[in-house]
Length: 224
Image (cartoon, rainbow, N blue to C red; front, side, top):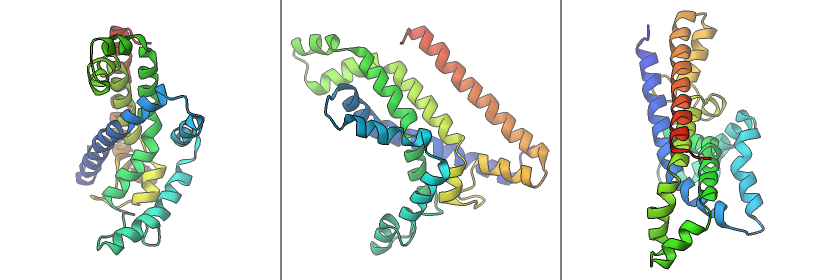
């Protein structure tokens, strides 16, 4: 069964994943739209930066984020100058790290969905007098709805499953920065396999159901 620390880790994980997905949808949607439409030469550079977390070891990304968010880093130092606290080993730091680490899992599905729309629906809407903003929200977003679904699920699941980045940035502070993946590791290290089974099995079932929902709904909407 789950104890109090496990429930706290569950709540922190769900808050972290939910907030990360909201931020990524707000930031990633315009970025994905731009990437799907632009022909600028530096597009490949932006795409490579977005995709870096897919190939970069989590500890490398976590290390540089820790340096940046720490008291001697540019972000942490600025926070201290403004009268705040460094963001390393805080929940806010976890959110920042999760946004960077899960960025490609939100941007890439959205970019693919926007690219699949093509030019004709947008051109037709333009001939009917729709402004660029109207065309985006009334044409592009509804047509890319399955892409938003995929991006939301993948971003959420990837954030829930984080280990290396959150451990580097947030440490392992029970009730503050300890997430489920770290709690599982702690239970295994302490040979508490029963607790580890409850948490790991729950995550396994959750991820399976999330991916199943994506495949079923995408097939229903007939999205490429």
